[in-house]
Amino acid sequence: MKEAPNNSSRHDENCIFCRILQAKAPAFRLRESNMSLAFMDSKPSAKGHFLVIPKRHVEVYHEMKIEELNDVHQTAQKLIKSFGMESYTLVSNNQFLQEVPHFHLHVIPGPRNRYFSISKEELSATHQEMLDLIEEPYAPKRSEMTCFACPCNTTCSKAWDPANIDGVCLASE
Image 1 (cartoon, one colour):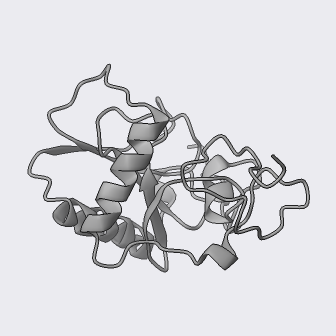
Image 2: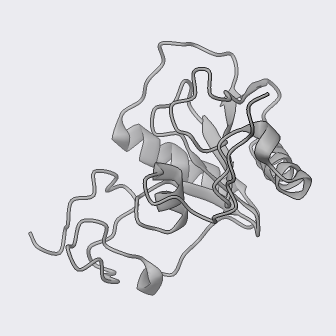
């Protein structure tokens, strides 16, 4: 029997989700707890499609601690209730069909359309609509936001814009 890899480290610098957790990559954040983060899927299958990930780098379901698993599901459930979702799909790929090797739970509002896509502007507007429905949304202070495009990676309230998912430095324009 193959032994599971040791994933005791908190983050993997090569993992996009770990980079999002460290605010080194942009994401439309929805809710954060001690052990999980929820954010909108950048390639949604439906309007309102979001992901919930554990904060510790864990690749597959069976490597998660029960506390992490509970927290991921509680975060998903709170958001599902906040958004009034009556129909949805929960999906978690574990190695098979898994694009990002960091455990993540997809919450996809129904009815599901495989070929549905929305523009960046619609994604930003949907993010704001969803944030308005959450009692305690993720809300960093502008002074804490990092400009992802600056080589110095400094805190820059003028450069960071939640709609700027391409990571273009607006301060240098």
